Length: 617
Image (tube, one colour):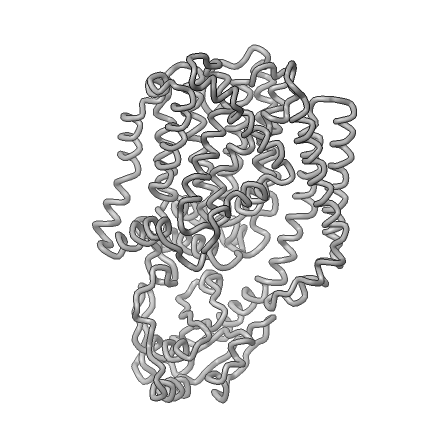
């Protein structure tokens, strides 16, 4: 189960290494694949990804991702291809009735593969004086899997975990070539980098290049690194694999693809704020802390060991540790590259930090090892702070009856009561309390393996508390959307269009598998809806005037209670067909809709739907 062939350290037999990999595989499948398809998609981004992947399988158009009858240019196709392959499996709807298992599987498997690569790397190239490399390897794999960001995003139908996984495998393959001193299988790293480029675009090449440049500067060994990984030939191979899709898409779709993918989703996201994702420059410093809880002190210790003045002086001098012992330095360069790149970007999102989580996991595991002849005080402080943070989290769960009632989400009004009644938070409190007891016990015994001792109860927390909490949230928040979609399909008449007004949930399109016309709450939205039902054109759907041969006199609308209170929606004689949480399924006479739209236009309300928007769905 090795990721790349390399001579194993004599302290680990092939049998021990194989057992370690099987253990990591079992943990990864449990953490990321258990009950993967038991909940619906969470609006708004995951349904867009899943719908595009399913559309490829349904239509046979594997070139251009499409959602709701419109091209989706925000991401390259690899994640859609993988989702589409799973959706193409015969009788998919029987064993995946919600359609979410297929959409989430690429994210889950990418994180499992990352765990395996991290573990295998630490067993093949153990750190200096590491008497338990297999234990360190499993702890590093779990440090990655237990990151709060990884836990949530790896069970979500988006492209971030796939980018993180392909980039992590590529970077670790590059380091392993350098550590082994051979260029054997150098090409594997660049094939994986091409996969990352086909997952999220040129950012993968930028992060890889920054990491290698910082590492070469730190090691003062650009020649040795270049000899082992062959960057010029590697970049050519990456381009040969990844660029054909970009050229084909540009040839077929033309300027809209160029403007949306390169102009908006890459250049504009980096140089200006999009979708109101304005955050302060120190945003990723906070994310760094949160993403590794409760092991952040160990991460900071590992990062500090690399940046310690004595190590930096060694980098300036000609004295360097063996290449096989440079993994901590490499992981630090990797994490710093992500931090620098996305800190300088104008648009900042928590998911941008996910590519740094494998590097953070390696630093945590290496820093947690007891030092042999060095000062133990920094490690003792890091461990003490880790236990303190775990205690704070445990207290938070134990005091849930105080803060949970403060949750106020109009889409989930019953969540606080149901969460307290489920006693899932009590399970979480017990798990974190157990982690504290085990951590203190291992520290008192000065035993190795203390990181694994704390991680064990946190694995149990995810399986018996966090995953059920996700299921509870789905039942409260997303089940009403699914019921509304089912009602629309049940009562829909031939040629009757579907619309959603107010709360725009892409999952409505995903569950109905039909084009849904989305509009917001404003008076312009009502005018837009009336006009679009008569004139808009999309792939697989055409708007028809009321009296046309294929026109429909009515429209089915899902509308939320807040939008219904707006004055321009009152007095339209809506026929209520079902109430699901905050949503109502209504049938509306289009003639009345058009009269209301005409009245609003005479009052100065204008059409806005024809104005191009990069992220329309």
